[in-house]
Length: 597
Image (cartoon, rainbow, N blue to C red; front, side, top):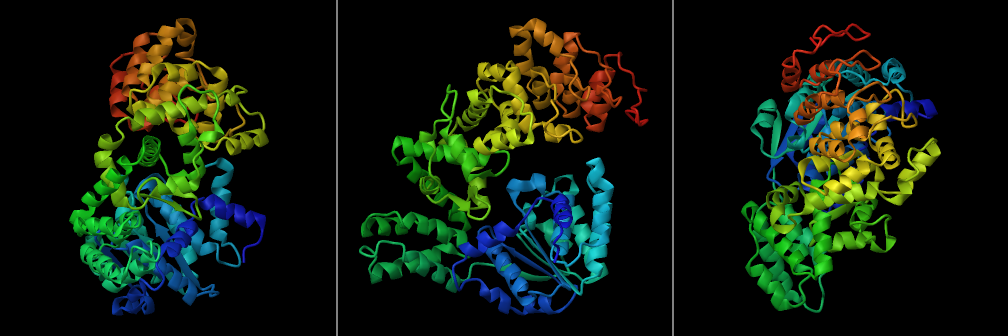
């Protein structure tokens, strides 16, 4: 097996994404004895035993498709354990992680999984690393396809398992690119593809010649799950007759949705008497049409809690649905402990992981291996996205203010870290810092948050430089790394995030300083105008041009002007706005000879 540090460095460089913790978590959640029916179907065994077969498993939301996928992966891993000629790779698509599930990300994950089980790292992968790592660039789609084909050709069997294909990023043609590559790989190597999806006409059309199975929660599996869950109910109130009634009524209500069985049992487990259990059973939501009413009942249970517990639960749900990426338990604990107008984090307000799970009426769960806290299902997110203004209408404002409050804590007054050790220690000690530094401005762009609070951050050079180091340095300055001071000003940062009102506030508050900053250059010679132009923030571009203080043709140290950045970002409206000034040089060239065209 791979053993050199260099090999592991290359493997990690391919992609940091690891679906192993999710696989372990899904298997742990499976009720013992359920789901094995799939492994005994003719369709599955035809797929397993014949090269080049595809099996598409479709079903309604909550039917148990993901747990069945985990069972399939586990079956393959056990059946072919130790056989280095067999390649097995799997992907769990997730609506909340679409930014890390572009075609290139998914294909690199397949490549990583195929090669990390080998005794020696293939030369084609070493070549990819050697070609790109020194320049801090990433492989193109074509290069990844070429490496995948090279690796797969050396294997006797290739199995590719993809769960929730419908949740894969369909924008920018990402899902189609991924499928085209995988199907092309199948045609050239005889790879076997197993995938699950909600019923989706585009996906069904791509697999019209595939083996197919309809996934529904089997009655015997639901009964097995209920038997396990009823052991957790109070034995003194659950006599034989009531146990039979619970089982019968829930099985009838589920109508093929395992998720409903889980939600109903979460409700039943907290009822104090037989009468309360019977009352719940009388109004139990049935099938997919009953899902919204079941979620509403869960939210009403949250509302019935005491004020501190209710507010905590609503904050948890608000953070989870509005966060720009999935949050770890520690990150959410820090988020919930932030108090308005404070200068440090009071550890007495940190809720325990148990409390995070227990106050949300069964709507929240923690993936134990990855420590990510999430909603129990995609449909939970969909329901709360439709109804959150009824339950926690101020969530987005509260989150934005909390992010900025955290960045303004006294502990960050020391500013930019001058060593990797200090930088890593800062991130370690301040569990939410990485998230808020990277995302506070994205939250602020969508709501009317506390303007004075945000201006305090933008006018604090030390705290702004600390936040920029954690949130922007590695993303924006790939060649420089996090230890190179960015020289970003408040106007730069506001322009980057598209906060035109904040720039206006800076100009009013400290006109001399802000006017100097309006056209200042960062460590790579870039101005606020170039950042706004690149990211498509039209209101910021217009505001900066209207000041009359910016040089529209000011080049960065690579020779790129704001017009070039706007064109490279595909921001047509900004290009047009700049051309209409009549002051822009359309023939400018970078040091590499690139023009706006």
